[in-house]
Image 1 (cartoon, rainbow, N blue to C red):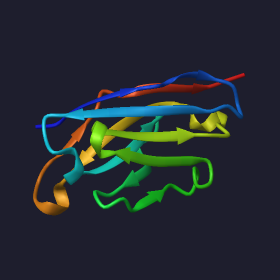
Image 2 (image 1 turned 180 degrees about the vertical axis):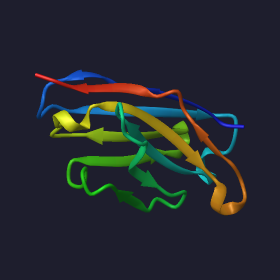
Image 3 (image 1 turned 135 degrees about the horizontal axis):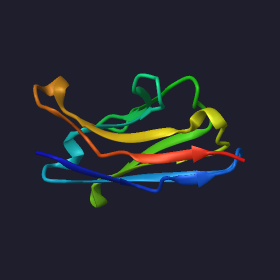
Image 4 (image 1 turned 30 degrees about the vertical axis):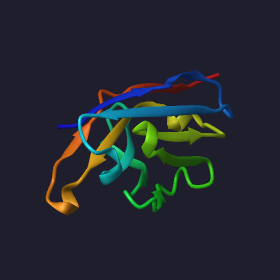
Length: 118
């Protein structure tokens, strides 16, 4: 089992920045691929950014050049630095820990709200 706790959400003006954090506990964090997803009302949950256990990253086209995902295995934490935020970035952001490609399970955090508004 993996428990994930997100933090860092809030209200920010367009063009502003936020950094989300997700702390994992309960298993060997370094073995998991980690991701940030988001979901806004009426829309499906979508991948924002992901980082594999080896550190390879990928991003949704909509956030490339603005968001940066990183991980600190010593702190069991994954981050996403979000810059140049836009109104359409408003959503609940969820942390995901995934070992399904190794035959394991995937886990979700409870989500943190990010609201971009002037």
